Image (cartoon, rainbow, N blue to C red):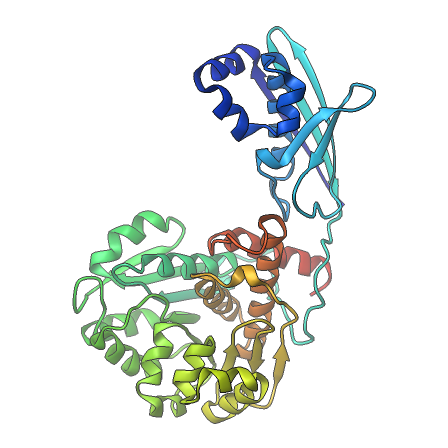
Length: 410
């Protein structure tokens, strides 16, 4: 059982000043219609509701869900005591009680939350495994991911994939980017080691970066190649040269896959411990089949591609298919429309790379990463709805899903 306490305080004068300054607009942004009707503009009552909401928000910190202020409603029960309602989404068994007091011109509220530790995981596939996290470990225990990602206009992909690798538990993450976009990523990625690499054109890597990239990869536990790299021809030539030469386990995603599709002979020379993560359009380009045929037999095509390329193939979509080169096959149980938005695939690539860096083999890392990523999406959509999810919303949810799985013994 999760138990949390939250406390907040606000001066009534400050609430009154806010009312004078912003009036109806402030009320509409912060309170429900029923709360506004109940308080009737009284600063003391409004201050009490505000502090109660803030106390509830603090309770949900470090839990699998969160509620913004407008979806927490605090009204009076029949006996006059404050009553909390969590609006608009599954509260996952959460029960919240609040108390409000006023003293010396201050409104003070305390909230108590109780909710089940297990929050209804969909049945994980049998090949799902989580890396061990021994108590005496240090960051070197959990490996290092090197991500080669991003280009001019596509810096978000680099941010998402590298931070997802860290959220999946990798000990360290290095992000190799073109010189022009380095300042953006250096400012954005404060926990990831952004490193500039010589570029072929503004914001784009090319063959001249090969030696520098190869040098960084010599000590990496896993590599992620492709998110946001762009489709410049020099970049594709770099990818095509780099893929067979990367010495560590590798995840190829997005523009990395597009470069391979342009030079299909490389698909037979991928090397050991490779994971390819195509969506149906990318799988169409890799296989030479129309997207409609890809979708008609997703299991069969993924399995055949994995055998032919001697790699793990992650065919993304509802019920993502993971196929291994030795005939392994897994179908993820999730169907999450909210994940159909830009950047979520970059997060998936980072999660899989992070799991590989911690020692999972390519197939189990892919099966586990797909499940964790989709379950994170399912949970976020539980309070956001079927649309409006941003890929960055998944980043904090990923370790929470992994925590829930460990609680269940995975």
